[in-house]
Image: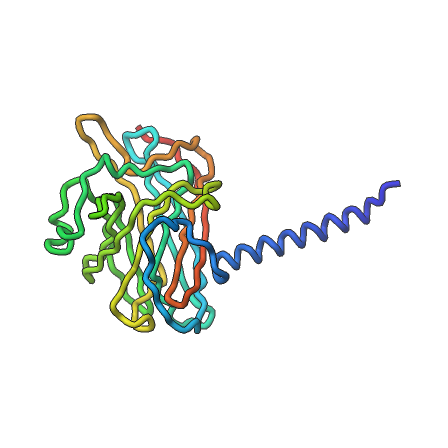
Length: 266
């Protein structure tokens, strides 16, 4: 005779343990323990020594939109929120890595580029037409909202990437496109590796409670219309994204999100 009740009880116990384990892993990823860098081949991050007197709790939402006029083109919108359990200012970040689903690849070589020197000297209006590849909004603690603009660039090293700039403050954040480490390749293909160096002491740096940024644009030349990002996933397939973050306290976290691949708009 099969002990049905016992089996059901055991299954329920295993299911409960699995749920607790997955919840614990999700919370650890979003709030706590060290998470290996997904782009170890990228630029070296700043070294900061701030006291670990707070823990950031981050969440991530991502939306994916079709790039009009292209079969494979997409635009990706990241929406990060950050807080602490105590309500105090979140620790400032010194590195972000925006992680893209393994079906997505960037096409920076198809777009005009804007250099950091041009942007810093003459502002966003001086960047070439077609080099703007994204926008966003940053909300600071305890208050203050500023607009964000993203430009395609080629760094002096020859690496491709973007410049995420905040015109209101003059901040220019350099990003390089890096292939992810082996441990991440099951879900992601590329990361946009962003460093946030600052001359200010760690505890005096500004921190965002919400940061929204989009990567995506189209550009038409004699060869046709190109999308800054392409996804080779089927429409409706769930795409995976992440935002690996390192803070001045030494905390590293990786909140993640999924979003469906949209139908193309031709």
